[in-house]
Image: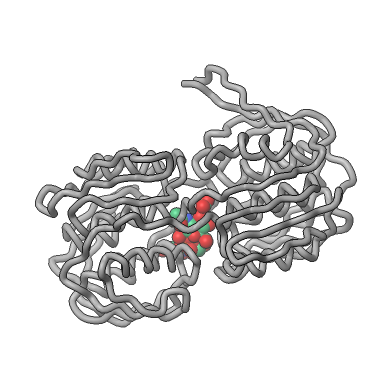
Amino acid sequence: MVERSYRVGPSQGLQGTIVLQGAKNSVLKLMAATLLAPGVHRLSNVPRLLDVTVMQEILDSIGVTSRWIAVHELEIRVPEVSELGWRPPLELVSRIRASVVLLGPLLASVGSVELALPGGDDFGVRPIDIHEDGLSRLGAEFHHEGAAFSASAKRLVGREVVLEFPSHTATDNMLMAAVKAEGITVVDNAAREPEVVDLANALISMGARIQGAGTSRIVIEGVKELSVLDGYRVIGDRVVAATYLTALGMAGGELRIEGIDPVTMEILLRKLGATGVEIEREPMALVAAAGSRPRAADIQTLPYPGVATDYKPMLVAMLSRASGVSVVSENLFSGRFRYLEELRRFGADLISEGHHVIVRGVERLTGAEVGASDIRAGAALVVAALGAESQSRITGVYHIERGYDHFAETLQACGAAIEVEEGVGE
Ligand code: EPU
């Protein structure tokens, strides 16, 4: 297997325009949503990511074929329900966390599904009890066997469901199950993420009746049939936008990021403003400028519209070279601190206390040899390397490329000294 790594040198500041990729956490759900309607679907603004490839393979294993018809356009051909499988190979399923969103659409279309407990990222327990509670209310029955589980439903019937926590993918599953259930489903304490809204909009474009997406109460009236997604455009990836903004905060310079609604990132933009990254909001773009050293800020992650947990590793990386002491608190995932050890190799002064990290900003980071352990942890290492005074090497970048389309190339085009190296790994 060819192992890719990044060699990153000290940066003189970033300059340029970035056209943002489509959102990973939206497109994977839209691909799952195609299972709700036989026919030929087309999606545009699809990012070229390993996770998208894995989702294509999973769909392929249950009889759905897909092909690229343009660089960012995917055509997905879904057979009649009678020809759809419902048991994708567990090895494939366990490779991406997002595979859990096959639950809702397969229950709604085939009535059965077998999956592995979600994998994808290595940061703590990732239970599915909220998915299970919600879908059981609509009539699904679950069986667990080791790391695998199955669910089935002769019919799904709309009900009032209160999610114990506004879980993002559990809300996705509720939407995709309820759109074809009999009667009306009300999902209370629903996740409000922009990617949930994107999924709801896509389903509405297929003929679904959904109200309230983007609020914590979503009302879905089931319909008998849905039509295909016809060229639906995936929204921009706010986590990728946040990554480029933290890279800018670290390296300084000026960036224009196109293809994102600033409203969907407002709380983060304010936090970044407090660290000295000045950001102008345009209707679908951000224009940001930063000096050579950020200022400290206290940040806590919260469900949307709060600061997303996915931004956190890159924020910690950026703040490690800030003037002053920051406290960054994680409120969503118990184990999401594993990248700290890697950041310390750059000379970052980080103390972790329960779910808080105390970041004592240092004036200088030095280059390091580090390994990425998940998508955002890997992106954080690149942010740190951009602020280091000597060369760094980042291995395991396949993790980064699960979520970032042409990451190294994009940074390079903005003036970063980043090179991709290919060697033979195990
Ligand atoms: N939770 C439960 N039970 C459940 C589901 C969730 O206890 O049944 C807990 C989780 O353990 C966690 C919290 O609820 O503590 C939040 O989890 P949530 O379900 O909202 O997260 P997710 O749906 O598994 C999605 C994104 C993540 C992102 C989170 C939070 C996808 C595929 N993944 O995960 O994105 O961090 O929402 O916004 O949409 C990434 O892109 O790298 C990524 C990990």
